[in-house]
Image (cartoon, rainbow, N blue to C red; front, side):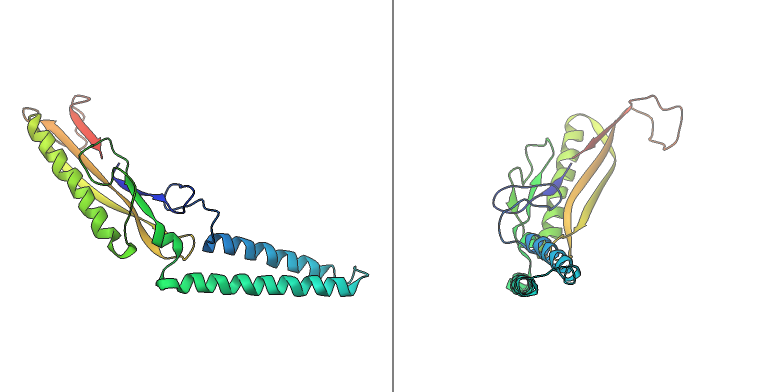
Length: 194
């Protein structure tokens, strides 16, 4: 399975970099901004139908102040250290059943270091699978490592969303591995994903 982000925020987590947090995050602010702008449009459409124009103008002024406040908070949040809070707080955790690799418990990785750290973690799986095959008298047929990416929902920047290592082994006395060969007995290859 490899390593993948488990989320950010102080109160919960979700898969692939999503988050659940009641805090002051860009996504929460953007959601509230959209809500307030929609509400403002509805008041503007109702302008001709309302008899108390002064109350409507006061409500619109209040909405405009709230929208301006939220927009400045969002801008400040995005400027803070040049990164958004979601990227800053993203955590990664190994989802495999291999107890000897890193990231068995969630840990933060700096966004600029995520690619090399995840690649290093996946290489742990490669070496451990090679050693396991040697102990079991098997031969490694193929190994692949894939780094997965995602797009941050808050700032829109791409990030490393995790990795996956795939190892295929066969017994040393089995015939050579041939893709598409129909005479291969079913179950002769052992395929594992870490």
